Length: 288
Image 1 (cartoon, helix red, strand yellow):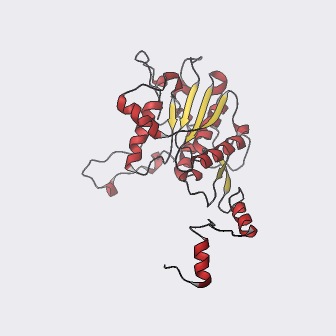
Image 2 (cartoon, rainbow, N blue to C red; image 1 turned 180 degrees about the vertical axis):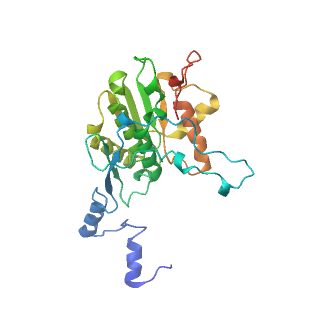
Image 3 (spheres, helix red, strand yellow; image 1 turned 45 degrees about the horizontal axis):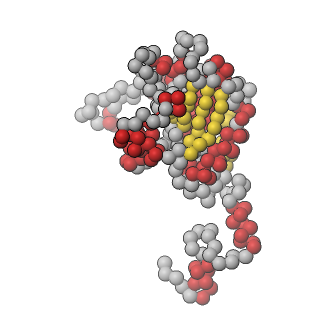
């Protein structure tokens, strides 16, 4: 649409893009824009997630329940076993909200915050539920026979966004007593667009859930740019040091472009702790 003269043209000259004033807009508009950017802005939401008690977790499945059809078979005719769906055995939402239910409070960003990291996407809710319902599927060390592991369990969530998955992991490890037995550290990371705003919201969500996490489980927030690990992968470097790597990497909805998969590969290769050649126990294997 072309610019018009008169009052409409004057309005067009005063604004370049939505909500951005070029000249003096007056105190009333400035105040309105300030209010829009605050926590109470339209689109900012705070949700409470009620997750299963990990102390009554389900056993891990013996095998993947969906059969793989031959390559020539159309996908529409692939057999489906509804009774063996990985979600079919998950406990339904509790009829009451007793203290045994794992509660997490998560704030999503406002409509003015365009980064994907300001939203809790559907796959994060699903993975959080699975982490609480069957933690041994994601933390093999929980079933380890050794009573005194040599080092604390280190968990990293990649592309944390609002932090639901990482906070669920921390709360699960805390409630299962992993922190008290061996210690555990959970790091929530992000480094996409608007990283500082995303990280600030992450810190708020961590603070809001301090009551659900404790007992030797520490949680911290940090910026992580996957691009930093591409040169290390190309050069075959082993940095960072083994003690700085993580036993478990978690993440949901991490990539939506082909090039991002390469960056994710580089970050996982540089951050995941691999067992030594002398270690053959399945519980010492890294999880991604």
